[in-house]
Amino acid sequence: MVKSELIQKLSAETDIPPKIAEIAVNTVFNGMTEALIRGDGIEIRGFGSYRVKKKNSRQARNPKTGQQVFVPEHYVPTFKFSREFKEMVNIGMMQKEREAAS
Image 1: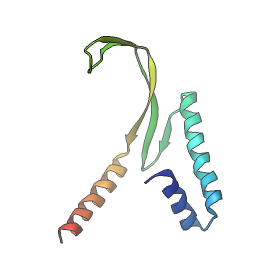
Image 2: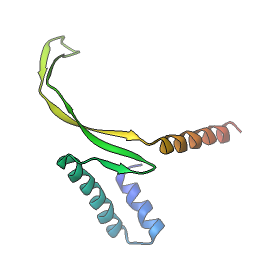
Image 3: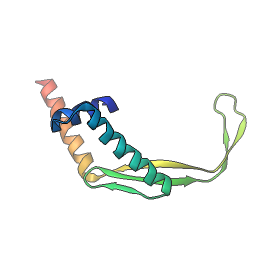
């Protein structure tokens, strides 16, 4: 699913115009981005949590040339799925496989 499909689904399920659905989706994503930039975590119960992790500077190797390169310290957004979400996806995928086998 891409962002435009998410907007269409929101619009269809809530009977709101697609332009309003687009504003809502963009507002949620912008709010999440701003929270991570501030260093706040985001927890969506039953789905997962976002955090920002600091990666220290280090020496690395360019896999193509083998040359050593310096990687400066940087921050990386991470996502951890909730147990409930993993179970829902697992059950859904197993049902999909069973239906395809029938």
